[in-house]
Image 1 (cartoon, rainbow, N blue to C red):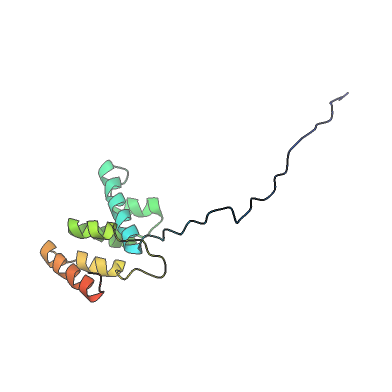
Image 2: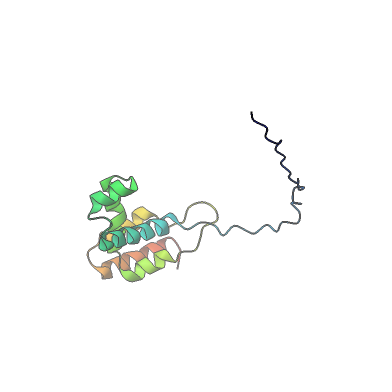
Amino acid sequence: MNTSAPLEIQFQLRPKPDSSRIAMRPSAGRLPRVTQVLALAIHFEAMIQRGEAKDYSDLARLNCLCRERVSQIMRLNYLAPDIQIELLYLPPTFTGRYPVSETAARIIASLFSWEKQRDQWTKLKRQLRLT
């Protein structure tokens, strides 16, 4: 014989907040794609150094990427340190794309000499009127 007491639930409804009282904060924009991918390359390198991944194949498997894409991403680690710093501190974009593409950065990273990389980086910034 089940003689349980009725269950009573109480709650209070609150009116919707007045949207005119909510201060709208301007969007901070988003980081350029090249900045995001360079940060990922640095993170992947740290994963290998910590032993969380043993090689690019492991990185690809762990991050659901193909090995070729991991190689492209990791190529950005070959950029001269000062260029990497500039790329990591690019300002956020509010609309559209940032003028410096990941592809352009990878082309510069493929140059063997950091001095040649710096020359190409300077030329690219001049060409894009970023200086």
